[in-house]
Length: 241
Image (tube, rainbow, N blue to C red; front, side):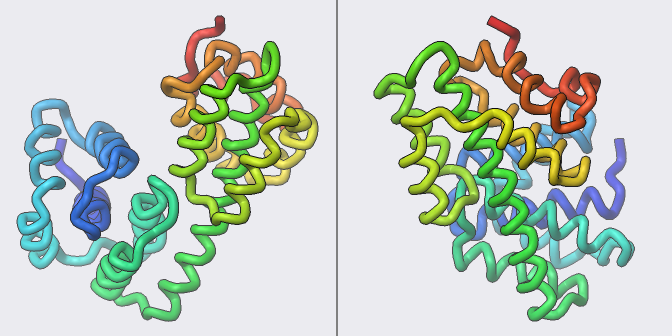
């Protein structure tokens, strides 16, 4: 499978951002692996993962690439910025690398700042929906245990949430969220953002407590929000308990 210009730029730019602070975190590695798996045949994936973990090789490759078609620039940059938010808030090193990538595409620093702000807000909104669903899940069958509360705190620390929102969500955990309010929050989003929120939930369910109840509970939230069952069926959710 040969890469399109847009795919090649996405992989290289995401790799550069993931290594901006010299540390490849679990969330960043997971997102890179997802992209590699989506874009490449299995026999090419190991070679690309080696490249994406080598900063010098990435920078050399980046310097040789010609920009992709202009109509793909913003979608590409949004994918790149999501790497910066994979494990919480973006660092200054990641912002600098993102701006360097945007500059290669001919986008001004002012416009890049506007885009970062927009996408960060959307990511925080998505993350809050995911966190609220996980809190609802932890109340399924009874109040959460101390160990489950601790696990929830770990997940919160890896979501793109500001400190105020993160603290508020943690403080609200002793009381179960309102299922109807969560469905209304999800319903207000356009379909593409709804699917993004559902995928964020599915991603955080790996090794999460009480995940066996997630499929049925998610249907109770998503169907009233107008999301059809076939969309839920495509999500990589744990089997029902």
